[in-house]
Every structure is written in structure tokens, then in C-alpha cells.
Figure 1 (cartoon, rainbow, N blue to C red):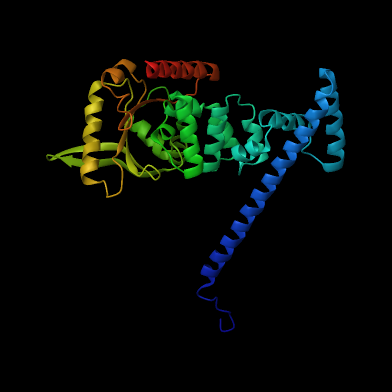
Figure 2 (cartoon, helix red, strand yellow; figure 1 turned 90 degrees about the vertical axis):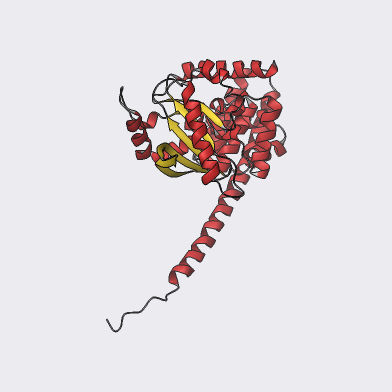
Length: 347
């Protein structure tokens, strides 16, 4: 139509720039609100704790919390439940120095902090707080990561405390990530919804159909490159099951899927893939590729005798589980693995 107003050609560019300004402002406002809220809750916890300490009676603490919750909710609305007030006291108990609270939970919401406070091990809590901020987990994702015992499934958890502290500090302050933080064992693939019997191709297809969830389990900095990537050596074709790239480690990650137990020949096959990728695919400035042999069962003695534990920066053998076992059983298995790893390092 003749009277129709023609949109400026650069309207999308202007809209994009204004959208960025709005989003930046919203993030700043959210950060400021979270910061002030945590400060407020810490001070409330400190005030209530100080009052409770004046009396030796445990019942007095319960009574004062109950009364305060009713009065505060009546005047200021929800957010001051009995449970929430206890969390505020716990925040002060765990971090009596305000500077420590700001350092540990900077950038996290109160709901994230509430999820983290029940974790007794401070290094484990710091691990989740750091990754939560770096990978921008929702509260639900954070709870899922804790429930699946992500910390215990990383190589980091099996290292000496000082090393764990150093790596977490470097991740937080310098955005430096290591393979100990990146790779897991076992990988929890319960979202694949596989039946009791399946083939390697079924497993591969299920992973690709649920690729987004698989990458969440791998870690945020993994990027999918190819499925069944063909490589030709001496006129013979080989196929890499899954090929990823890790942005922070700056290297390709080759994943070989195996249904049963780990076998010695899998090592040679993976070494061939890695050397090919290093020779023909690696660009200047990148690090050598890493391989993950993902098996239903790890065959720990085979792995040990093949020196794969000592060479874990190059080839990693990890188990996968398609059904998450009861938490107590998983907890026992992972804590046993941590103790064995720590004993070996002390020898």
C-alpha cells in the first residue's frame, strides 16, 4: 500500500543494541538486589543468634524464631518463614565474618545459598558455589548436580585439599579450568531412557536425541562437533563415535562408546584416534586432544596396569550409568573410590 510506513533498514540493529542495554541493566539490578539481600539476611542471622546466645535454653531459641517469623511475615510478607530464619542463622554460623560470605557467594541468589548451606564439607560447598556461578545454574540444576554427587564424580575430589583449594581459587579468580574439574567418573546418563538391552548405536542415537542434556552432564564448555567422524589411515576407514570441542581447555575431546567392560585393546584404538587428530586436525595454539573411553564397567585393574591413571590427562576411562542408583549406594561407591585414590597418592 502507498501509505504504508516503511521500516528503517537498521531497525534490527537499533533494537539489538537497546535490548543489550536493557539486559545489562537488569543483570546489574539483580546483582545489586542479591548482594543487599544476602547482607540483610546475614545481619538478621547475626542479630537473632546474639539474642539466642543470651539464653542457655534450647526452647527459647525455638520460641523467639516462631514469634519473629509471625511478626515479620505479617509486616513484610513471605520470606521470613521459620525455616528461612534458621537458614539466616546458619549463614551467620558458617560465615561469622561478612567478607567471607561476600567472597564465597558473590553473584548467587538467596535460593542458591539456601541450597548450598546444608553441605557440611566447605570445599565441596565452594566447588558447587563456584561452578554454579561460572555455569549459571538455576536452583533446580544446582540441586540436581548435588543429588547426582557431581563433586565426588570429578577427579578433583580425589586430590589433596590444598590442590582442590588452589584449583577452585584459579577457576573463580582467573577463569582457569583443569581436566580435574572438567571430566567425571561415572557419567550419569539416566535421562537417555534406554531399555534393559541396547546396542552401541542405540546408545549413540539416544545421546544425540538428548544432546542438550548430555552436554549439561559433560559440562557447559563442551561443543558438539560430529557423530561417527570418519578418519582414513592407510586407506582404512575408522569412525570416532562422538567428537566434541572444549572451549576452555582448547582441545578436541574424542568419545568412544563401549557397552561392556573396558578392554586393553580400547587403549590402542583411542591412541590411534588421538594421534590422528593431533596430526591432522589440531590448530596452532590448541592443546592436544583428549580421549574418553566411556564403558559400562571400568575394569579397574586393566586401567591400572595400562598406566591409564598416570596418563589421565590424555586418555580417560570412565563408567556411565543409565539408571541412577539409590543415593546411599552411590555415596558409598564414590567415597570408597575417593579413599582408594587418596591412599595411592600418599604412597
